[in-house]
Image 1 (spheres, one colour):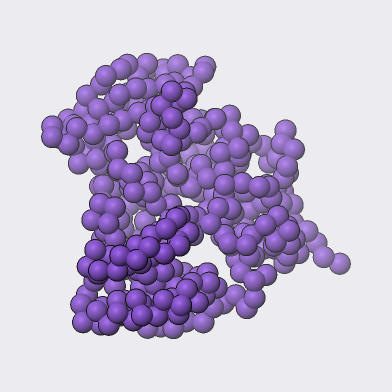
Image 2 (cartoon, rainbow, N blue to C red):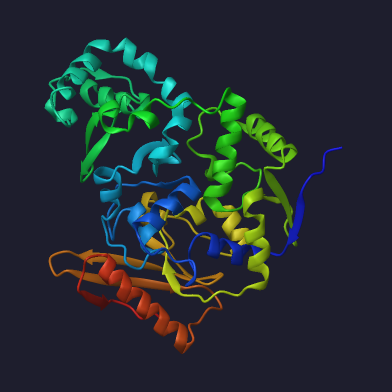
Length: 394
């Protein structure tokens, strides 16, 4: 007889666990690069977005968790130390280089395209055998070819195709421009040549489902933006993966009071959830990234935290409720507001353009001071030496 693991909890207990799990308490804050890499390994990946208003999305994710982090620091881990790499996971993402082997099946999908365009791929490969890196503008390949986001120059599609197929990786970036190098020359051979641990697609889907559960900390078996980027994972495949993980006791069902759907947690994290029920951590105020791992399933965040967040950067201006690049503000287990920040690079100044407090969350004096302290830290992270307000934060 198979015993199915289950656990009961309240929303407040889940929220307390999540803030600790995501290193958003005083006790769990990340202290150095090693701990940053360990956090990324734990959650699988952090999402990449090139927009830079007060830092790119990975910067914003990490500044909330590491007080010593400065904008752009992640590039050293990516392109100097090479312990992380750019990968298509939760859309454009950054993951541990140790996860390279798990993306074998994803890379295999692009090998036929590279074989079909062997002349362009061969020319680029030959160039990279003699040079450290290259970008698409270095090649006169002006033919337009079909690509997943529309017709594209052959040079750009070929380099991206090589990257998706595992023949190349991103060497570095300058703004939105990517420079590539040969994967075989850049990745340690034991990692590059490692066999795929997932025997078939069913194993791959189990791995991706467990990975996404760990990306957030807890997750439900529902259609969600949390599953974005997993090719072929439809509801049938997702349901089967959940069923297998439950039968293997790799995930634990959590029945949450006043929630219709159960949540699931990695069995290895259950003890941390249980411990978080009795231990009240010391809280600080944090400004989160728009694509922060904690926010990947916004319907779940609304259900748990009562916080309804939409990143309106791609919403037409007239339809926005708040602003262009508005970030959530978290204190402990409660989202207390949202804030719009901009950077005056010429004056090296961080500007608080607008602040919207959540309903029934008027800031007491001590919390107001904590938010001001948070903004001072954010100013330093953003490589600014001045902080200015165009609004009140009370």
